[in-house]
Length: 237
Length: 237
DNA sequence: TCAATAGATTGGCTTAGACCAATCTGGGGA
DNA sequence: TCCCCAGATTGGTCTAAGCCAATCTATTGA
Image (tube, rainbow over all chains, first blue to last red; front, top):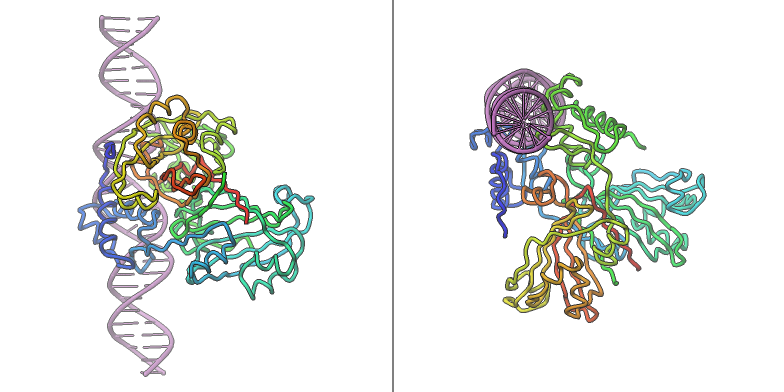
């Protein structure tokens, strides 16, 4: 019931062989150069690159122009949605930090107004961050909050947790969250921010945070590196 | 704060242009052949294929050998985890069905025994299915249930819902589920079952279903087509 | 000793061409 | 009229080769 028989192009054989080699060699081991592999497998460099490209997309390998191709570290962060990203990661003993790319105060467009249940044109606060785990990029996140929260930047300097800042300084407690999780593919912008390759798989998560009364407190779009992150949810029926 | 400036290889320009064309042309419109596009853009077929490959991975296009390349239908199914897959999809008015690939009764290995909290070697029931939505493959799912449920195959013929069958025929109600969601890349086996291309992004979901007393009722591994599925979760804090 | 630089190395992108495999199409035969 | 098959079409895989861009290394020179 396991083998259903599929055609096996040459690059696929190379790919599975390289996967095996990578597992044996262990994290951060360097692979032979593409040109050397082409010779070893008696194939063209193009074919080698196709095999490597898929393994990179799967998170088995990573490569850097000028340096070489390496076995990736298995390094997934589980982040429960039950509490905030910051709290969860800390509870797991992970070194977590953020880079704030910008905070500004746009007006709500049609879509955001609908999500946050405000009138279009209402002042919002937008926080764009890159979330790091053990100093390495994990996610790119853009949060929208209703209202013009002018001191938010300074507050976040102290404690990276947006939820903690909202609760302690603005009296807004997130009591319920709705998450939508889907796949996405990294474009050049995502790839640059997250230090991954164009074409790598991402988890795209939209979150609506609500307070005790069911009023929207945040609407956030996040892209997480697919090779470093798992989403965890517990639901009672 | 939007344009951060990234190098733009030729294939990327072609890719974004094709994306725009695809949106304009609408679902199921056919694109020119790769050879024709190569001429139109004054580039090689290889470059065209790289652009198309990424759009296929993103779910914007799909292609079939011998037929051509087409604009994909936007056709995502939201499935809440709150209830069962079957119930949710029906509530959304989607035509859902399953193909049962096999039902057998293996013994629990180390890992399954741990998840289902039984002694290794305990008899289990394994149900392997392809879930269809509007007659098209959406997911490949392998469920493990504790105990040897010999009539399950016949019961599932009547009503596709595993949860309903467990409740009505075996008195096992799923009261709580824990889901882990991560990305994966389709290999040839997944690609064949789901009618997608090797390398397409998938959502890999592991679910542990528990009854009222917290005892495991199912442990399931599912792969969903990334271009057709969104995972939805609501959590109270 | 240390910094700057030139060259070698390695992955990134592109070309031009070839053959294979799946599909479609149109004509010929029953 | 209908079916089947040969040929054309289209995407799938692979080759051989070249140049570019990022990185590393070893030499040179202050």
